[in-house]
Image (tube, rainbow, N blue to C red; front, top):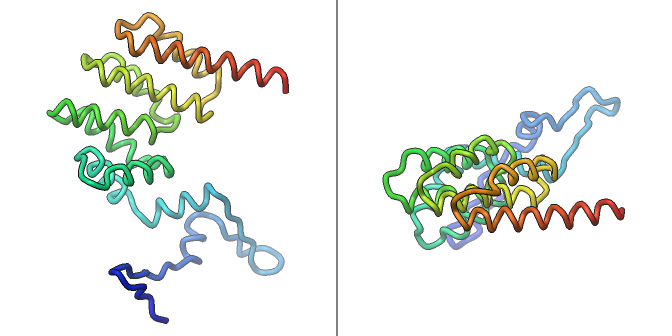
Length: 190
């Protein structure tokens, strides 16, 4: 079969059986010989496996560089929420010399993050850079809105920062509190 689709895009063959096996999606002990499962989460895990951690970390670097195409890199990372990208954002935040690079890394983390980054939020909010502080509380905001953390967990986090010195942080805290109140009202009516 010819895998050349023109325009320079070439398909590489994927060993779907081996990939399924490595992700624990095949049960070869089923009565009929094969049992398989799949889901959106399994698809996301497969894509992450195919791309590999180096590619995902390079996408973070590309986003932070601001080169044309950075927004597509951000969108892909947002869709996947890959741990290697979260780690790379944190590494850039901690080590970059340029304030804009540190800010971009935390801004990207805001949409790439999942609950695994919650331990980092206080570090962002304690940073001397007000933009990093604002993006740091933005992580809590995004996790609450996307329901990647529970309402109680989000409430506990925003209560810690109600009196933060940065007015942008206080503004976001207020917005998250209002959202959580509305969410609780809707859930109590269900």
